[in-house]
Length: 174
Image (tube, rainbow, N blue to C red; front, side):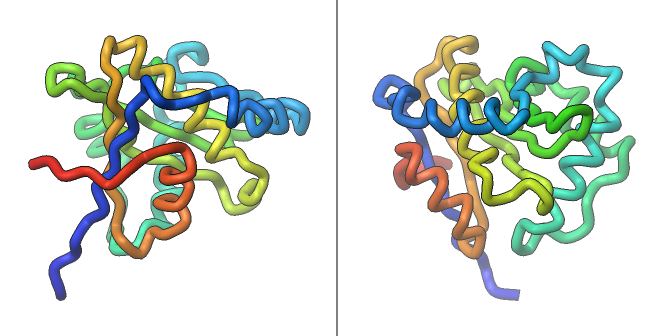
């Protein structure tokens, strides 16, 4: 299997203009899509729902392979110091979980890290991912940092383009 050259991106939050993307957030709200966070929902009681949504959306990531079991997911993604329920944006269509944008707290390294953004196939093409990412960028401020980083498989062109549209630029870090 050939080595993959991952696409590393970084957003300078101080240069981000949320007002430019507010119409996407408003359009979601007008369509009945509510944006919230795991912190607002009550966190641990919803971990299974978050897991199921993440598992379904991750199936579309190029080169992803098998997803974690629920216990592995809790151990590796939720029961870790970088997990903060304020950094996990959930899109709800009524009671249905239709999207997520999870950002972890890496403030000790001077940034937050966008781990995963995904929307269920039934809800794609409505601007939900862009709205969630716009909504979630405020998490960097809660952590006192001005950088958001993310990494993508080069074949994941749709989300790379979405991030570039938000203002993410190529970055190089170890």
